[in-house]
Image 1 (cartoon, rainbow, N blue to C red):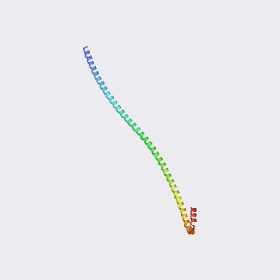
Image 2: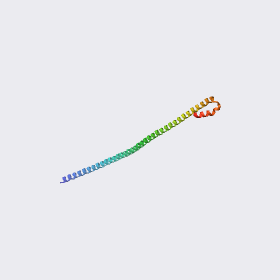
Image 3: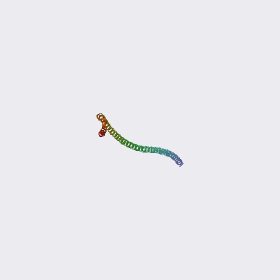
Image 4: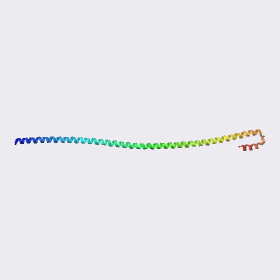
Length: 148
């Protein structure tokens, strides 16, 4: 019986040591897993934070690009309007110049016609002064008025 008690005590001690060893091993594994899980969580949090910041940056860049695109479209429309206005003003100026040239041409032609008429009158006067005696000056004046 004593041998059985000794054997039983030895078995109990052995079982207790194995239990303590397993318990300590499980505690070590648990703390290692917890550290691994915490590390993974931290990595995931950092990665999500980086992705979020990249997404925000991309969103800001996209919004800025949209604004620039709208500004460019507005600028192009403004340039088109300015081109149209320039073409319209250029056309108006050309028309004014053409009208001015037409008026000047009419004046030149009128002046030329008046000059030719004056030249004919002068020529006529010269011819009549040699033909008519000086006593008929009144007739000469009447004739010149009729020619003009």
